[in-house]
Image (cartoon, rainbow, N blue to C red; front, side, top):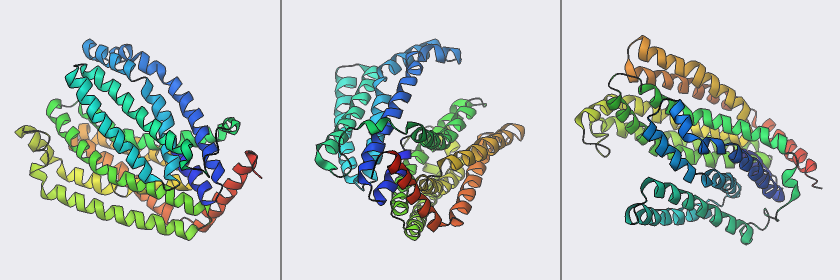
Length: 393
């Protein structure tokens, strides 16, 4: 939901309405904190929820204990993600990287101390995770209010509580858009858990998803950079510059995706050796290497186009596209190929790749046919309207 700030803060920064960035961030804090409060029952009642879903009692009890210790985490997210978007839109990413790196070093030390030396185990791991995320919040907040953003942070304001409904709608659209994408391939793992020889299949698929997740951080970086760059240029009224920015991002990310897809096809037989020494699992991962390479290739384009959508404020439209392509086309197609045509996990994954391919193609068509000068005019109008509703001169 915080990605709504990439649209509003990015366009406001491009339009030189610097004060509004701080107002937007505070509105996001309000909305995300309320959402974190609404999520509390899920954390508190995790054990009975898991038991109701058929999980073993011992697993459900331990998971419930862990989630109790994780309660501070969503509140850290509610503050940290808006802070991160707020700074990204001002091109202050080195600050974010430094703070996160410092928190990572602290997390490694605390995890070693609490989990291994003191012996708190999984509870200690949950507690140190909360501490590490709050360290990031404190670092970014201290930089912001301590003079790092003199133009965009002018202090706390009651304007943060105005125009919340429109801000909430864009936040929800942003959240739905990204959740539909992020949950899609997680569902693939759940589906394969109901197949024959599930232990080997899930192990192989989890390894593939881990490799995909590691590589996916690169397109996600392009997603963030593209969203900021496009929103900055649209806010400044430079439609052609916004178009050029997304073209460069898509081309660069695609080249990187081709490189990693090629590596996977070259080393397909030894792809999982860093995860396991089981010959059965190694062979299973080998059989999925082509699908993994194809997924990485598609995912080198799709997140960048999502960044274009975020920067342009198209989240609601893309949410509908994701729902149709992923869950109305991709999942049923995968289920049919997997169980009806007895293609197993490769059939399920192939069907879901088909959904991703259709979604990517639709986004390409929309982006290529877009009138970027008109988008720049819409962004300028949006900034004027929002500044007027917030009492700006």
